[in-house]
Amino acid sequence: MAAEIQPKPLTRKPILLQRVEGSQEVVNMAVIVPKEEGVISVSEDRTVRVWLKRDSGQYWPSIYHVMPSPCSCMSFNPETRRLSIGLDNGTISEFILSEDYNKMTPVKNYQAHQSRVTMIQFVLELEWVLSTGQDKQFAWHCSESGQRLGGYRTSAVASGLQFDVETRHVFIGDQSGQVTILKLDQENCTLVTTFRGHTGGVTALCWDPVQRVLFSGSSDHSVIMWDIGGRKGTAIELQGHNDKVQALSYAQHTRQLISCGGDGGIVVWNMDVERQEHHCRKCGKAVCGKCSSKRSPIPLMGFEFEVRVCDSCHEAITDEERAPTATFHDSKHNIVHVHFDATRGWLLTSGTDKVIKVGRHHIFDSVFVV
Image 1 (cartoon, rainbow, N blue to C red):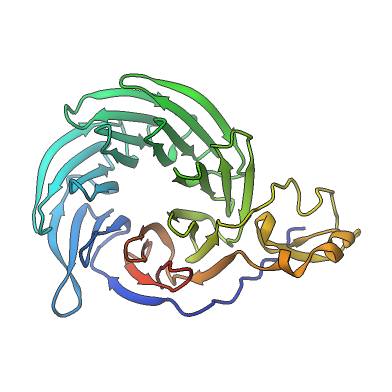
Image 2 (cartoon, rainbow, N blue to C red):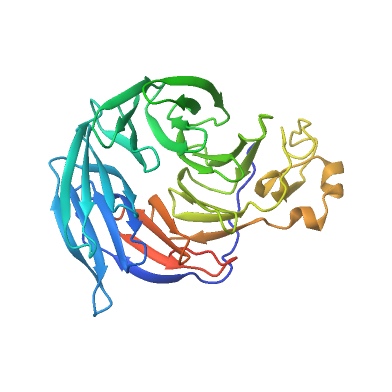
């Protein structure tokens, strides 16, 4: 019998800075414009919009551009103001935004996939455009020439994509629950390894290049922290959601992981604590309901909610071990994407309700929305 999950109360009320509405369909991705009071969004309604804050205090589109196909994803590079947009028809369209964010100039199109583009990542240091699609293909292109450099067929449709510039390793999470690591060169790729840990499909990936840790979110409601840099195969499971994990973001300066659920739940994990690798609950022994009715949270093992433990472990767990290492919040909409602006401590979420929310919360100088 599964442990009954009891959500924890909110600690301090998040502050909503802005609520941006106007899209006719789901906003699949959105980002906060650095150093500006603005947001860039792409939507299933085929629109690309740049929202800037007006004197009235409201956000209104300074750019409203209609694409030939629904917009599924995007990647924005603030340094070059390069905006890469993935479309439902498999095309990636590239634009350059003007300095005042009032104009977008077409650059080129990449015929990247045979069907919907699921993820894009632009790598400025290498001038590469990485992408995954519903055609189960990972591809990378040269952004200068537009030439396709290579590809790799994944075991299932990819829904997570991250890249490490230093080692040129790409991480791909797919709907079968597998994570694939590839080593990229200029014109070919090498399979490094694949691994599984989720019982559901991977829905999001997030990479910490400093600690060399990969985070994966899944439809099985969990987040797994993979120690890639340690090369020991260590994996710590984080249990704190009541619904599938839809999006991940990482605040590197405070070492906080932000995970967002399909039910609107936001969990902010303190990753600056030492968590123990575990196999099963506290001691690893199989415990049935007849053997023990004891339950306890074990945050240092990743269990923020109460789980069944044996009698001896229940007595041995200290108050310090029971102290939460995460905080829980309700965004009040079903989240499909999250973006964190570390320079200002703002967090943006977009939801199935077609609304974009931008806000902050004073938890370890990190932020988010309601």
